[in-house]
Length: 542
Image (cartoon, one colour):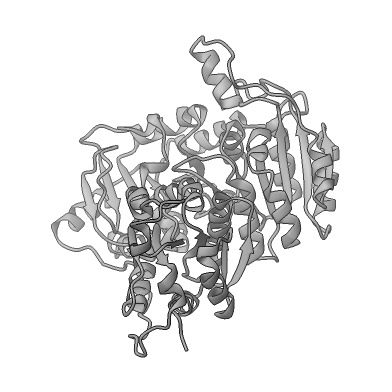
């Protein structure tokens, strides 16, 4: 006979889910068992936030391979749910499809039993696309809705609260068969708005495109690359969209959004452009320099399948469609022509390369990132934690791979890089993974080194050791504030790596770093490279 938990698990397995992450509690034991019986591996983590990021890493790896299945995070009632709020908010802001399964007591019991009991749905509703409470007779339909909502439009988290009695009781004998996953948006724009946009683009001599997270989630990389190449359109991306166009391509201007020094070279191009194309661009990833980066009357064409209510900038022409269909409609029948004849984009690309070059003294964070990019295979996936290092590595690390650099770009939360890399490696064990993390970020999630050991995953963890919250310390100094709450004592990270079954080593020069990274590619366990860079190493870097 089929229980409610069985039906939930069957629907998730039918949607293509193969991994679930979380921490058990008595209220979710039936769900855990049902997931395993349905062929969905359950992975024990040390914190619910890390479990959610591992689920995201799996999703990125599988989406790159053309699969569309949401991640799964499982938490027990009370503290388990509260612990996961950060990663659920990240999924909401970073457009990540996540099914968040939580256990709860039955409604009647909650009226007289208060230990660890609060309203999960009320807590989570502001940061999820939908919240459901499983009920007998409608579990299959509920899960179809949950999966469809998580994947449709801009993806995001959906919460499913499962009372113990519903999970453990037998279902009604007949349930509607599982529904189909929603198709990617393919609406083709038409009418006067399209014709006006086509005329603007046709006559443009300095067109410029910006691609963002929606283009990634729609799988529009090939179409964007072909369009830019055919019509000689330079491309800026958000950090999430790095790799939609191979960043070695002469038209690729790299990622933007956090670095004022990068903005100094990119924003003038926007002012000079006579046709700015926004391709699935969601400015939720961008900082203050990207609020109103052009005048309200600027020649901006936006292709977006979902409404844009952010108020960050003005748009002249809106084409409500998926990126691929919108580009086809915009360019159909048009003849390519020479663009940017003044060489401004080539000059900006060269200036960016010089801006973020390795340190002339031979060692520092930029040298670390350049060295690893040169040594590691082109197909390597990088993950980056939040902090000063992320701003710099996002400018330096070039990728030709969609979803080739994973990070928390909208919420910008710490302690995400290691679990993101673990999920990526778990789902795609043939592709190398390097995790870039600051010492504070690694200390925040040290327990997941034990999870890394238990999973038996081989990846590279590059820790930038400066014994400071460098980005915050920089802000303190720029505001002429006292140094407070940002510096801390050092940790012996290589010893910790060995303690958790990995290989760890201190690194203080490029030659050692290159040799250790090459050796790590053949090592059956994880490698932790603790790169000493010293406090204030990021001064003037970004």
